[in-house]
Amino acid sequence: MDGNGRWAKARKKPRHAGHRAGVKAVRATVEAAAERGVKVLTLFAFSSENWGRPESEVSSLMSLFVEALRREVSELHRNNVRLRFIGALEQLSDGLQAKMAEAVRKTAGNTGLVLNVAVAYGGRWDIVRAARTLARRASEGEIELEHIDADTIAAELQLAGMPDPDLLIRTGGEQRISNFLLWNLAYAELWFTDVLWPDFDKAEFDKALAAFARKQRRYGQTGEQIEAAEC
Ligand code: IPE
Ligand code: MG
Image 1 (cartoon, protein in one colour):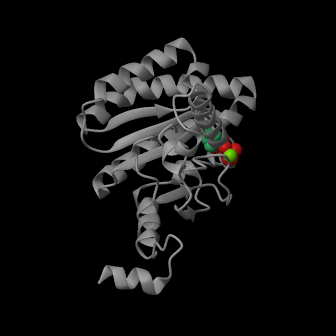
Image 2 (cartoon, helix red, strand yellow):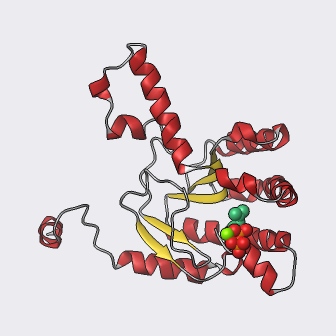
């Protein structure tokens, strides 16, 4: 979700106003995803590298997370959304962690859209953690070295048990992954748009879905193989 700062700057407003406007785009996107039958939506809200922003911006983002949780969770719950958080959550304030845990508990039984919010998340951090866990198990003799493969690594990642994302959407014009779900995005289709995050809405979401629908997923195979398998 990129472009909040530029959106605000273009309106001669402080960056915080852009982040606030970004919450609205989150609401629209979650609604669109649920309506379109998306099963899992993962939002990159705050990266491990975002801690390096000016302290005032970090603290206003943290306040915004608390406020958004307070305002949005009931509605998400009513809409059968199951909320989860991924990332180094222990780096967050106790108050924010408590609010997150409460929201997760409240929505745990919901059967609709799974909404993962990545906070203090980094794709490399995620893989390092998994590697450490598996290395510890191997060194303690719990698992054989040969047992470590793509599936056992995936099972230790933050999105363990979830399907790999089919589609990555990045707003704000940059064409890079910026340490998001590095492992899980291996075969994702990528959709980059110049639209700034606060301007992202259902219509923009539908453009990404329409482009996705035109893609042939080959996973290393040939187009002919895929077509034959589809018949
Ligand atoms: C993304 O918007 C929001 C967060 C990282 C929380 P930016 O804040 O990166 O906006 P730009 O890139 O400065 O426009
Ligand atoms: Mg940015």
